[in-house]
Length: 208
Image: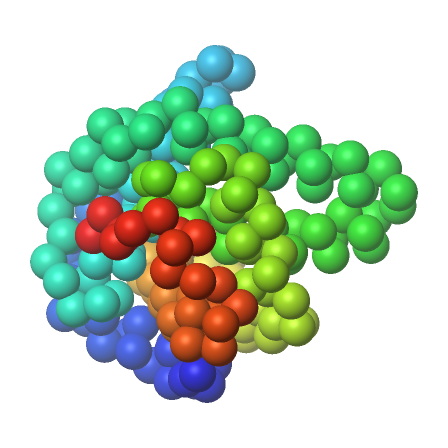
């Protein structure tokens, strides 16, 4: 499996090659999610599909493809729409229940379920609860690794704060999203090669 540095470097090159459309996609999702946040129904039925659509968008460009803004809506809203929402709600519920046992168990479970959104986004035939189970298996032994990956962006986030968030939309946000998506992509490939997850469990090829 590629190192953290290799994944981040590939994400930088990917962002550079798709800069305009990537920033536009990130900005559009952020604005629509913000606008829908005033309504609980809107945050569930709009923000969740949009965030998963953005993950698919990033998967396409990380793997060398060409993604469009339309892909955000096609993959987010047109393919197993209710299943995506159900899977994310299950993930949120289980994470919240674990957090009732104090903060640490909730954090650990949050990392265990970290691959769930990507599986829901990329593999439309995987059932919602199965996506959670697959994520736990994939993340076994990799939770600290993902934590360190997220921590490596701390400097960028502090720098973004000095620009009142402008740098977040213009570079840091897309860079982080593509990096995290790349980590999912590489880790899933590693899990399949090692037999941790079988192709049959993914119920077919990804949508991208």
